Figure (cartoon, rainbow, N blue to C red):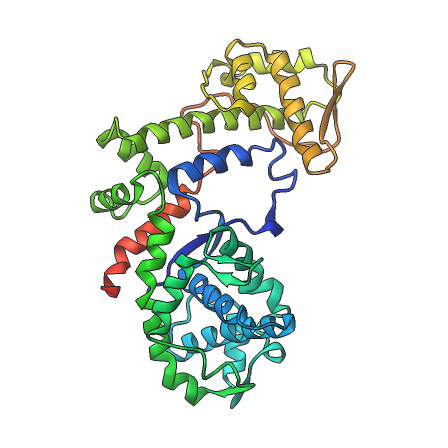
Length: 383
């Protein structure tokens, strides 16, 4: 069985705070990342096995009417999924593994609400991290308590090899029983592995998966998204993926500069806008030309390229103000009487020289390359 990183849709609990995204640029890079790699990858890391188990837990819990019973069934499937993997010595990426391994040493392992493998399994386990992801990805419909067509295909295929039916009425389970059935459970995970990989990696309007395979063949030991970007430029100059990557890199450069200038402004409390604009004009950053068609950043780029640095500062203050207003959060920087008022200061200086601008965001590319590489190197074991 393969251990691999898997990225679900966003967990609403980790919506960026102002400190992480004070200019609200997430909407820009997420949109671009979605266009390139599809809709099923984000920034929350787990494993494909856990995603499959969460789907199975949803399938079984939806069959219950009582809400408490639904939750207990979900817990049981998650717990059994952890214990079967421990019994089969397949322990990587088990959520709650510390408590699960401790429970495994007892003669009779408690299942259900009384046997939670977290202090609060609902918020810290698969339900907390995957229930929204399953719904947003189209695998389940929580409002109707049903697994959708694509999800049902994966579930039904899994159930041909292994079923939880004989275990869900149990309040306790012994390690001998777990060891007896662990092989079948792990085999079933492998049986639907490629189906989930297809759902995750190949649902994009760009044929990026085939290109990443070729990239790995040429550079197996180097799998960063920067190297993939460079490789695509060298080998597939006019490919739609390369064109999209170039667009993303240009926008990312603009986001990086905007973020640096905003951060610098937060070191200039009490200074006039003209004073700060003069410092920016004298910096290396002022020499960089930008391009982007994104409406949220377009005006900033136009002002930047025309070297209207005073207006650049006002535009960034406006972008920040709108972003924080949308989150009902206090602003960190305002301008009053042409002076910068900073409520949350930063510590930085403008760079004196720039050889290569780093990536500001990863556009899910890091996650995609990581997942695709593990599929490429280890997926053959499922054939």
